[in-house]
Image (cartoon, rainbow, N blue to C red; front, side, top):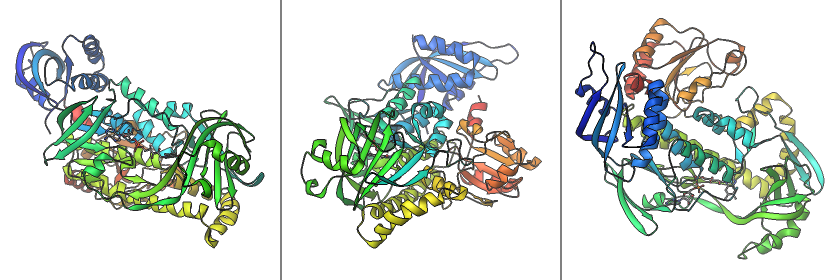
Length: 611
Ligand SMILES: Cc1cc2nc3c(=O)[nH]c(=O)nc-3n(C[C@H](O)[C@H](O)[C@H](O)COP(=O)(O)OP(=O)(O)OC[C@H]3O[C@@H](n4cnc5c(N)ncnc54)[C@H](O)[C@@H]3O)c2cc1C
């Protein structure tokens, strides 16, 4: 893939060099070609600061400043740049006329999926644009639940703690019939020892999106609001996109197009992909309200009726609650249903008195998965690829998971650090999970609202009796956590997954180990390939990792590692998203060598260290 800047003409070259190791212009050009360069816009104040900072700390300066420049550059094609580069131990600056290539990736849609894709690509040093047809961030709270696996990804991006501090941990679920409590499910820290985030977090989607937008702005990237993708064509080498912004059309080219444009995705439609599945007959309502009388403030309440329910749970603070339920049948076909139309029904079912309605909406729920997630250079992610019932709070989380999976693969291919075939694994890994999720949430949803014997048993026995009982046992709590938190997502069937060591298969999420012996997820912050050995690494394994400049991390072998299913002295090649690619109980250096060669994998560390 071409560098994002092609130098067409050198205006001036100033090299700070030492006599014993002179810097040649050819060296500088080579550095430009491999993009291991800092380039800054002429006369920019931030340039001068950045250069000073870069001289102090090369790597950090590069990531942060490159992003700033990229965004400014996106609309111009020729520009005079000051270039600052490191050659050996020497730095050089020069002024050049450069032809700016278009962004490598266009992200369509600034919902949670698009924003997380953008943040990941920014961290990985890929040039991109993110366009959104709305005029600003979403105002509706919509998805509330943020699952542990997403917080683990946010930890890799460096902001999980901020999200946790901004949300509310969900501690208990109360099952009620009218005013009578029939069961309490305790699931505060139900994922203890399984994740650094052993809970479900309540963090409204509007707050969440604003937070992600701020994080993007902090690395110099602005969402292009009021900008709509209207058309695109993939010629096999580039994707030609037509964007419309305030009446004006812009045609530009990118290497890859990512449709994170929601359930009515223009990208999915443009690819002529079917979206098979169905629509539930029930019409649902959602209301963010201030109320009194909710059975247990601060907790989740499910208030059951005959073939209906109302969920009551806190958002933002314990002063405001979210109500979700089914619009009564007699109103289901009426347009413009208001909260007042259903007030009496809701207040009776949920045992609340509503004083203020901050947001109310009704909607139909679909359960669908697109037939493909990738066609050529075009991808879809998030609701563009899959929609399902909100049971278990999985929708937004799955979209964010798509984005993380796609980002590192795109970055690796764009930066020539992996064979292009790894892009195929995005669809195979994520579509499999989306299909199983849609099937599971569909089954559960039918049990909750159905009228048959199975639903009756579920509502009256499984949910109020069996589930609370299961949660009294550690194994039951763990099973529930694994089901909801998305930590059990695995890619065992993926072409990128190989081997078994202990209970860990290639494709599994690396088990988390915390405690006094150290936290094995700390090192995942590099978002890079790495080898983990729990015990002692053999010399051959160290050599091969060193040859490929893949960091090898050794962790103390202990009871926690055994309990997590790891195998003593086995080698685990870990992907940038924290999933195990190769699990090798014998630490066979040849296996690792073959695996890396098969997919032409190079670590990001390689690219940085060759500066
Ligand atoms: C009432 C409700 C409650 C929900 N509750 C939960 C929950 O508890 N937990 C959960 O996980 N999920 C929940 N969801 C689902 C969750 O909101 C979605 O899964 C999530 O928003 C999907 O994110 P996304 O980024 O994929 O798509 P979206 O959030 O839909 O974002 C897509 C963006 O693309 C933009 N766009 C579309 N077309 C174009 C175009 N041509 N050009 C430019 N921009 C375009 C749109 O304006 C939009 O901003 C809920 C949804 C609803 C409606």
